Length: 419
Image 1: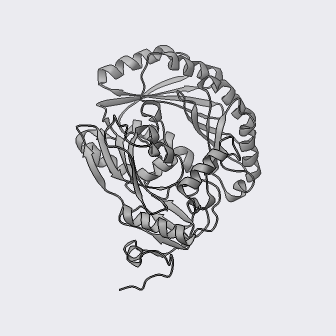
Image 2: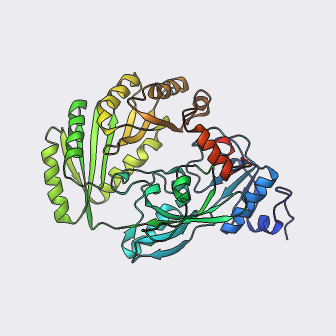
Image 3: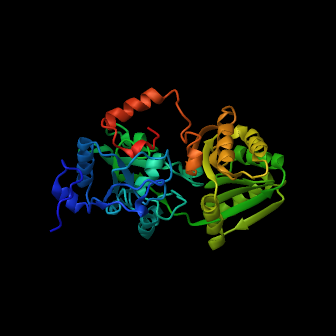
């Protein structure tokens, strides 16, 4: 039998052994910081006990799902322990008659949807990373083009189990769509980036798989025409599944997906033609080519170097947003991939670290145009010049109180934020 590690002296040795505790390696590094140890608990109770032991011993903890977003947030302080949810990867229940499923946090979204597909259902979350897990998308509230129809992970969540730093596993919400049980802690931890508690499983409302889909890609070389087209579609009676923008340099594209029966799709496409008569091109895409279009829209920003910024704006402010990005671009084009109907998206900034920092501060200096400017990906040299979360806010005292209530020892997330 292997010897009991000396790490976490107050933790149950059986828990440590069953959680495959090992020393951290360079492959476990979080934004360049190598953790002291890594644990992979196989049960919610073991995860909660690890958190309780870390809290008693003052060990800093970072929670890890698929590891796709470990570079998000501030540069971490020293990390004593990474707790991985890799072994918490089961679909616990699938009530397909009720269109709900309960799944453990370490389950990849892609694997979950492969399982749900057997019953003609899916969880409509389009993460840009294949390894993204259920817990990770909730913790970051990360969403893509499907947000237009289905909302963010926070909107699809109806119940959650959390492992707390005092060793408890607590339940919030339930397993049915019309649920009113308990405090809505699921909404609270959505977007908390693992700073409050560990998500061990979640219950979602699902959607039926559509019978067919078609995507329209319309290109515009004149910003004014693009803005007018977006405004016209937004004001129409059309019901797209996704309604996105992609803008780089002088070229702008509108991407609109319809998912329904073939007859309903054809009717909506014909209606759409009326609103996009000024487009320089109008292309219909189906089948594998359609999947490639949306894969490029969700992943393309991440496949090229540069800082990635998430921002939001009022949909009516789109002309000012495009004008601001053009003004800031200079010799390095700024790329935008956004939800046109929602007024939110990603901005990719190129150039050196000083140019990145200046562009980010430039966005934050125009709160009347864009808001909630958060840096998702940036090199260390950029993070040393700016706060990725935007610095102090009016809600800082409230967020601090919530953090102290959930994590009184302050062990979670090693100062990476947002709380």
